[in-house]
Length: 502
Image 1 (cartoon, rainbow, N blue to C red):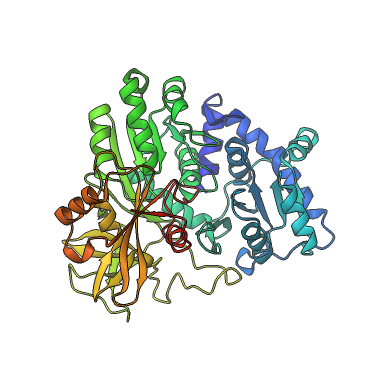
Image 2 (cartoon, helix red, strand yellow):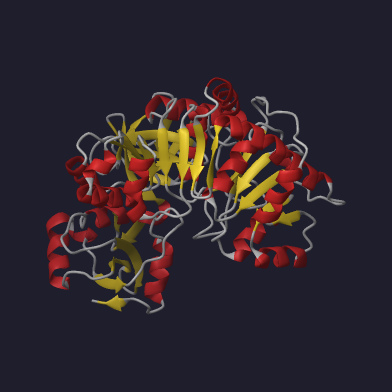
């Protein structure tokens, strides 16, 4: 793994450079190396002490799995980074997931050690007969203090399993998949060529480390010899202070953070003189945010990338709303119909990708879904079109509705309302209808303009079949840990009568 090779080199030649910086502390590169020796000694002892350890998923090749499920971004990061140089599979489990989600992934994947402060999780795992070990962060750190250091970290072989990741956990049962060290090396080769991590770069990633975007920002920062700056939770008030005080040159975050960045820059642009680049992922970037950032911080560049944790980085957009993607040269893309046949240029369909960084597939114990076919092509069921070599995204399978015989892409409905004054976040959903099958409804978060203004906007911007027929308001829409609106959960709130109809 490049992270270990680079960490060892930086520890030798730049020992005092910050490696990981968080609210609970910070580690230099030399401290990270020394810290990792005690950390692995504790983890190894916890696994070995189990009389009847859980059996890890076959895909791990018998290597035990250690999971971190705590709120502290700093401690999560140092544990994941520290264990990278040793034989072991690591995982991050969001402590905010529903209890049943956390239990399920631990039991079905054979995780053997869990670092967690959740008493409910510990009790539930014991009740289910789990034979692994759960330990609080405080007890884990106490053991680290007195542990005899293990031999130092080493660069591991390509095909060794490295990280256990999860595709979801907020709207459905989490699907687990493994990444080998070779797959992460391939992924880093793509991101380092296009997303500009680099030696000495100070990257701020203000989001949960259980979120794949933040986790990868940590990995690529250390793999490139930069400094990873983390936060337990995103705080817009502290954003400007951290950029200034920690001399942040690069921010990696979901699009929702960009608006806070713009607002903070308008109040105090002098705090952002060191910032050079903003990298967003995880959702489309509204064009108004790109324009706002350019106006508030004209010296800061913005890259909106597209990818999937299972597959890796696919391409990016450097203008507009991020729906037109330039595909990276090492990535192959194909648009296919429901029968698997390629469609003509410009025709919509399901996106298939062939990339060296792609995981081999989902763990059968967590899902029966297929990620990758025998030909090496993979899909997470995103929809789009290929137009003159560029990828035009249309959303996931659940983002397309059929109403009155017309196919409607729900993200296109939402984009029509971007920049509308006095309007917050919106979510388009399909609701059951006796005659049409479904109708398009728009849900608005918080206060909103009148229905007549909304309807006029829709008729101006959208084809007739895309115009919502129903309008609702919610005080707060359900979101993922990364800030994305959960479309299915929002539609369920409307169905249960919890939204106000306009």
